[in-house]
Image (tube, rainbow, N blue to C red; front, side, top):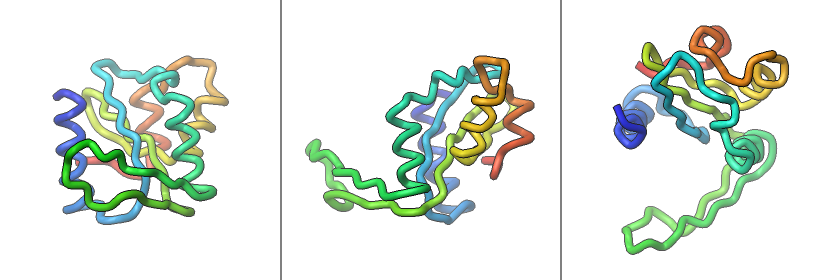
Length: 122
């Protein structure tokens, strides 16, 4: 499954199953681990802003019919969602950072994700 296919599946899952407000950064790996560096600094900062402050984002006008011009997220749940070969896990941004900062590894393993995840995408 390509990341764009996972994004499409995840969007449907959010609407049908999860049905909660939040900010989600999707990552995909074909191995049993995801390098922590896969989460770019600006993505980490946006997730932290949405959860602990206020994130304001202008939706670019690209010729599509956008739902609105911009949005603001304040104090909402924020997750790194990782699709591993065996499962997909939503990990709270604070838990992701805590795991990264306390790990001797340079990557998050699927086993670790199973332990610290907030939700599983099925």
